[in-house]
Image (cartoon, rainbow, N blue to C red; front, side):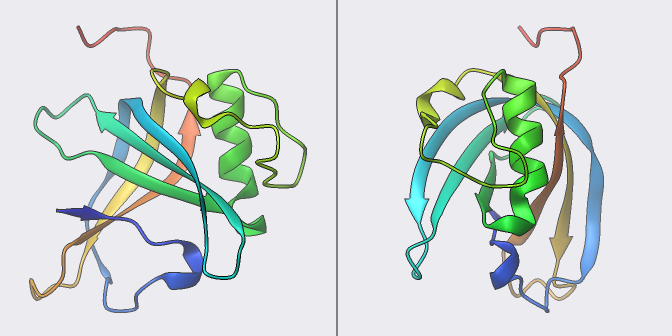
Length: 133
């Protein structure tokens, strides 16, 4: 029941913000993908720790508009980053898996129940010190 679309595919009918907040999460999957145009992207799937039962959150990082979020993700997880650029050349997605992050996110709804909820990651931060388990 969650979906994430890259910035260039934002859907105008997703206009009502139904949830906005900051939550701790653990990255459970990360993989390199490619857009239709051949641009390399990084798909990051995070398991939200609270509230319990919240669906996984998928974030697709690609292109210059996502470079700040990519830099935040790299900094928080201890990975290297080339300033001002989403460069996946030397990134091993497996190194993100298992890392804890704090995510600033929002969930939007079309207001009519016609489409699945649309989750957006706005930024990555250092997680709280408390461990979920």
